[in-house]
Length: 237
Image 1 (cartoon, helix red, strand yellow):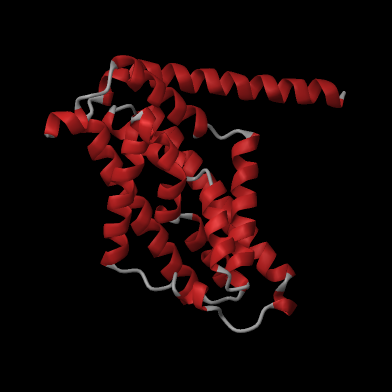
Image 2 (cartoon, helix red, strand yellow):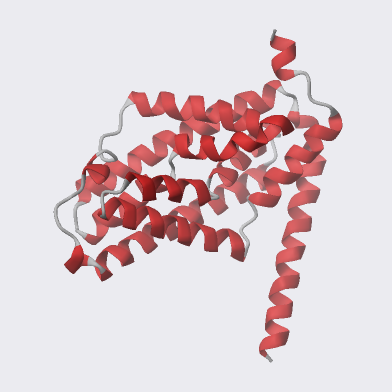
């Protein structure tokens, strides 16, 4: 049973999984654009107390990838990979909070009482830690196994990393420190649970042997970003 769960991946499948993970977690313009769009949807959904809109924001949010990338870098004992994934996650977190705060300030005249969706994300507990761990296991399996990759959107909904960040921004815009700190703690609990569980799965699947593939993929993606920036500068001239 144990071997069927963790030792069924071929070397090629592991290579593909690593390449896909770090390609999606590279801090490109597209990555940050999707962060902005997802947090805009989340913020408006929270302010309007619309669960459907909030779910939509989770589906398009790419923040799960650098979180998994952080777990992968850790089990590979690769400090540069771990640092880059952490930096990407940190920048995405700051961007999400700033965008949410700005939106809240711009639409302050349209906002009524604090919605139930907002309040629900200001009550961190061990239950959310358990949810994060389970979601982390699911996300790691879905990322590693090709047949399960189509379940990643559902996993992203269960992890729900973006809505708490949006609530942090809403709290800061309202000068509600308790709201901001509580929702930030919820985000940290969820993210930590995902990283712990994903690192466990990746370790049991022996992804360490694909360290060179991960390093090569990151370098290739960084070159692509540099080429895009160079073309943009050239066209601007």
